[in-house]
Image (cartoon, rainbow over all chains, first blue to last red; front, side, top):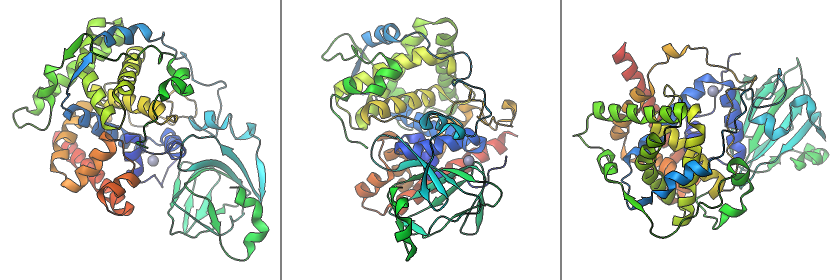
Length: 217
Length: 241
Ligand SMILES: [Zn+2]
């Protein structure tokens, strides 16, 4: 697997700093599970955090009884020895996505939203982007739309064509608020992807009335 | 983010589920306090402290985490606590928490250090970077009541790094040295963005408001800063080969 389209460095940095909303973090973390190149960049980002902590001049005191209570209150190592999840795969969804979705692609209750598109909404907390899984029938185009903010799409199966480029498993397609696009699934199989968008899609043109169900996005 | 949810700790399901140890950590008021004298020496950039001293310190700190992992070494753990707890607490307070909440998260962070020490890998991270990442995650759980999605290297769908460890460009300590130097050569504008993001936990949108500049400018400064650090790492790697 060769990943060609990575999340921007500003996203990897913000994931390292811990400032992304949960839905966007989920998408970045799922990409990281598939992408050693970006994990090396994350290591760098976290070393920036460590360096900043080193530069801190600690003021005040910290209660030393914390030493004993940290050891006392810490439960026994709760990490299972083997793989963290049931089943051995092969899985289409790496962690953390599989946990959020409650299973792999085949296990989910996909809901048709019209136009050959099915979706599963994922539960994330906090403000900001919402995450959803999309399954776009082979060869289908998503209706033309733009976004109130940035939309990130991580391809997990099949391929997606958008604005002159192909995106395949592990690739991230980023579209900011200025982009109006109509991505299409490649012809070979249904395209399954994870999308995180920080506002509702805005459909354009005369067709949208027919695609009302998509407003459930 | 940056909004402080007061008294969140006790109602946070996540904190409870994941650690089961949040209750009982709140300890207000003066008790047996440790003045942290050694922290001042590791403070802001100081020409008098060369990289070799830092590296020795970092290897010692890494060894302490390993001692906790290998033999539940309580003395090593106490040293880690004394060194890092004041820094973690300062980090949490910068991020907008009140003192009681910060103390809770410090406790939570070090309970995690004790429990997960065996997951520490000195090839990947210095002690400071590893503990930063734990504190960051605990902060997200407790302050923002959100989960922190992370990949799991034990997951069968995880894509391992094809590069053998030996070929990894730099050790974590060498990387930290390069980062330390490179941070000092960033433009002030770029350094500010990194500081606000990493140290104060501000989103790019919040940084844009705070600095009175467009969001796109904040992101491009972040990208430029990261590019500068990556170039510094690359130069370091070439110098070593
Ligand atoms: Zn990548």
